[in-house]
Every structure is written in C-alpha cells, then in structure tokens.
Figure 1 (cartoon, helix red, strand yellow):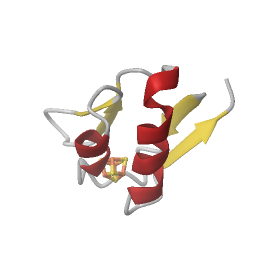
Figure 2: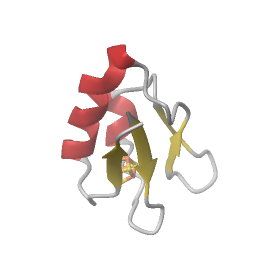
Figure 3: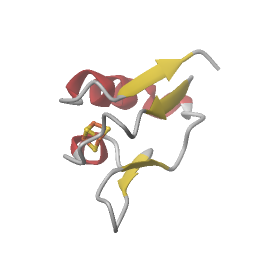
Length: 65
Ligand code: SF4
C-alpha cells in the first residue's frame, strides 16, 4: 500500500502526523504534510488509513502497491 498527498489541498493541520508519525511529518517552512514512508509498512497500514479518513481537507489518498 502507498500513500500520497495532494499538497494543493493540504492545509497543514498535522493531524496525519499526530495519528501516524512513522509515516507522516510536517514541512518546517510551509507546515504542510511530508510523507516519509510512501511505501507503507504493513504494521502501519491501519494507522495510515485512519489518518486518511481524518484529514480535514481530503488531501491524502492510498493506492495499492
Ligand atoms: S491532515 Fe491533511 S491537511 Fe493536515 S497536514 Fe495532513 S495531509 Fe495536510
């Protein structure tokens, strides 16, 4: 599973980082989402799905492999 972010939609709430810091971080300058681990390790898939559902801007999307 992969996760991608649409930076045009991301408003930098950092909710994704709060929910799964193993995969998401926040850009220090713009405050937007940075994906550290686009190929999501199996053990973090559930947390990533939770982050996707909780992104207020709908900026995150998962894809198969
Ligand atoms: S939760 Fe959504 S809008 Fe907020 S930083 Fe993450 S991707 Fe961006």
